[in-house]
Length: 266
Image 1 (cartoon, rainbow, N blue to C red):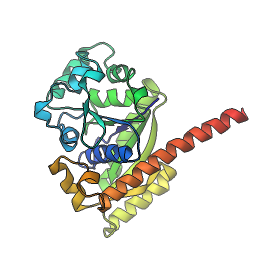
Image 2 (cartoon, helix red, strand yellow):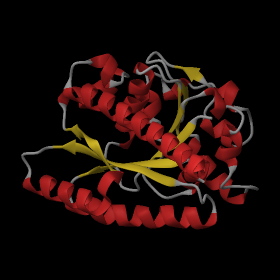
Image 3 (cartoon, rainbow, N blue to C red):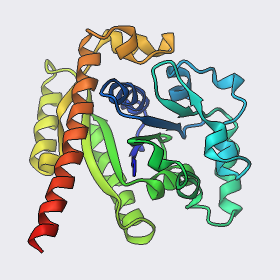
Image 4 (cartoon, helix red, strand yellow):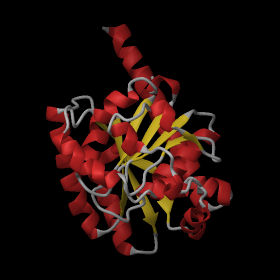
């Protein structure tokens, strides 16, 4: 059964879509089968995967509105992962879902039939807490939280953690935080180092060891409709996301072996 992971932060401009696209491509490079779902009406993850959001024949909007199954909305991308794209149509879904039945469960239900075909399903969430984000969190096993090491990021993080706790208590008790990812990191900035230390102190091993640096090639890649691994695989950005994919896989394997050991002990 594939692991469903939401990449989310209520604060914009933290590298959420960059992480979704590049982690998907890096997992494919490690021979994992990946589905990425763009759940942001801006459609940046769709464009960053080399797919024109204005020419989509079917999108995640059609899936959420029960107009078609996931299998019919899939696009196989050049970087090697499957994609369900998004565009401005998705804005209407936010409103329509409020009046629908099982409004928080739509995405979970839609994925039930296909998640077993993938090793990982990554969901790129919108930078706000709305019904789309709630659908993503209800459908997910875990959450990756990308964040910049700056003062306001910590305030945004506490709001997001409160949201996750509410989802855990009411709609998805199995939801976990897989990890906090430090993005756009510049070690020359004293505040960045200070915030990074505070995160590690507070959250311990929930903070990924991998740090995504501020990197020109990483910033350029989306304008070419490519993950950085395809654009410049030797860049620091590409190497960092490959390291993140490795860390994600190792964590998942450790969880399985720990759970197995506990079962044997019991």
